[in-house]
Length: 193
Image (tube, rainbow, N blue to C red; front, side, top):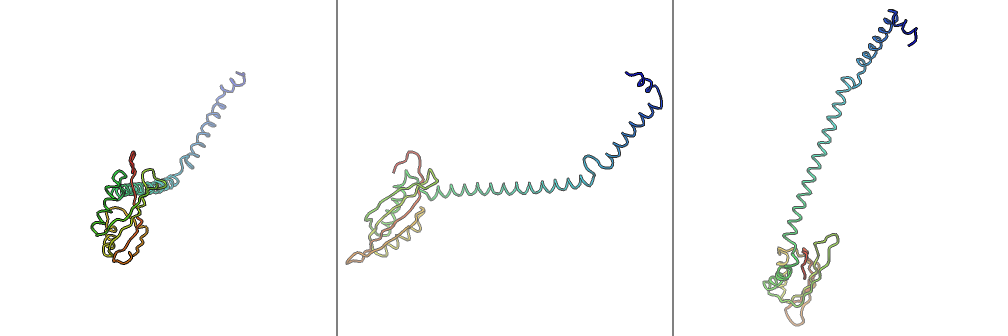
């Protein structure tokens, strides 16, 4: 250490000035903290707290809306699965359900089947559902054919009448009706038509 520094430390005036300088700096730091606290003033903190509460309320509202949407989506999925289970036919039971039901309705209406054909087509976007186009021709009296259409309408199966053409038989009271029906089929793995 230099000789002048040792002499300066021994001088009480210099030591006192150094202590006064340190105390002055400490007072300035305390004044800055007291006037403008680093965390913000009480008003700033209250405003920030209010902003945070409003943000929390908005986020809780969004969360509640999202939960409602999830509940609606789950309910729609359940309803859709229930609808498919009730109104769509399992491909393995196709002949005993849809074809058998058409035969029972025709017998109940007093009409006769002349011809039928079935065509299965995949539904775009679904791996397990297919649409089946049924073309059938029946022969019978007008009253029987109207009863058959009424029974089709009341069927527990989801049958859609796509088209219907009626023509009279020559020299008689009978009509021939050709119907194109659509129904939906659940395709199970390993099932064959």
